[in-house]
Length: 94
Image 1 (cartoon, rainbow, N blue to C red):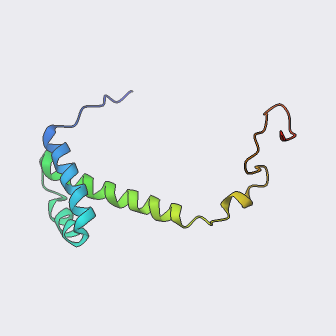
Image 2 (tube, helix red, strand yellow; image 1 turned 30 degrees about the horizontal axis):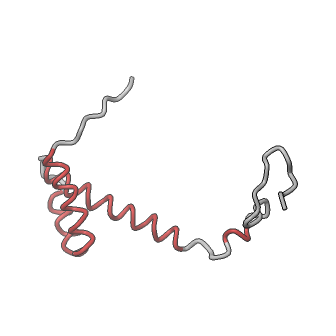
Image 3 (spheres, one colour; image 1 turned 90 degrees about the horizontal axis):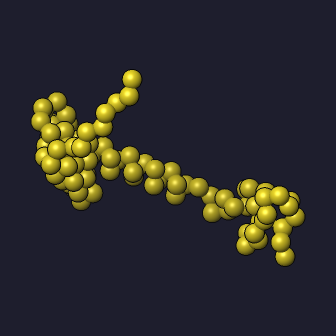
């Protein structure tokens, strides 16, 4: 059975944006606000919680990305920097 995606309400979007911005600038306040609003019904409150969660998710991904070693390209032996390779020809072009 396929799910039907609905456009979020204007209140949810407004709350999402507010929750995201609050977490970006005031993370301690956002944490407490998210705890308080977690079980409050209503699109605006749920949007604030979702915006807070999205910011945390993005921060986690960013931190994970930053932990990749600077020599990441050196760890992949198949790739040569600056050289284009034809998929049919295993030899790199000069």
